[in-house]
Every structure is written in structure tokens, then in C-alpha cells.
Image (tube, rainbow, N blue to C red):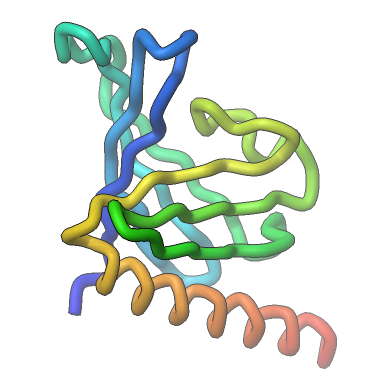
Length: 126
């Protein structure tokens, strides 16, 4: 099973842009690779960017599956943690998952939540 999930961040710049990319799980961090494009013409507006969010900076990871797709919310411990992710508001980044990727997203994010819990337990043990 791949540990990468395709995602979109919609309604950037008042709906004129969106970002698309991959979310993947690495050792004690989530990594987002993405590029921003014009949502009307599809022209790429930015080069490929990568943002790593260490587990030490994550408050919560949630996943909600819906009929048309799913939604991942990554809640940072502060607003600064998510400042490099487009569309992040109040320290929360919301990623939209396509319907065809829902099952894999659920599996990968369950694994991410488990690893986040294990990381926190390890931090408590010192």
C-alpha cells in the first residue's frame, strides 16, 4: 500500500486558484508536496513546494469521509506551524480527497494517527 494520498486545496485567492499535491507519512512527520494553479485556466502559478509538519507541531489529524470524497484536517499547535500551507486558517490545514482515493486516505490517516499517538507516548516516557 502506498503511503501517499493525492489532495486538493480549493478556493484559494477567492476561488481563482487551487493547489494539488501529495500528502505522505514519513518518520515522525507529515509531508505535503504541492503546486498552486489557476482554477479557471489550469495554468501552474507556482513551482513544486514541499512543507514538512513534524508530529511535535501537530495537535490533531482528522479524516472525514463523505459521499463525494473526503476531508483531512491537520490542526497545528500554533498558527505558525501551518503558515506555509496555502489556505490554512487559524492553524488548521484542510485537504480535500477525491472519491477514488477515500479508502487509501482512510488507511494512511489511521496509520498517521497511530504513529502520532505512539510519538506522544514516547515523548511522555522521556
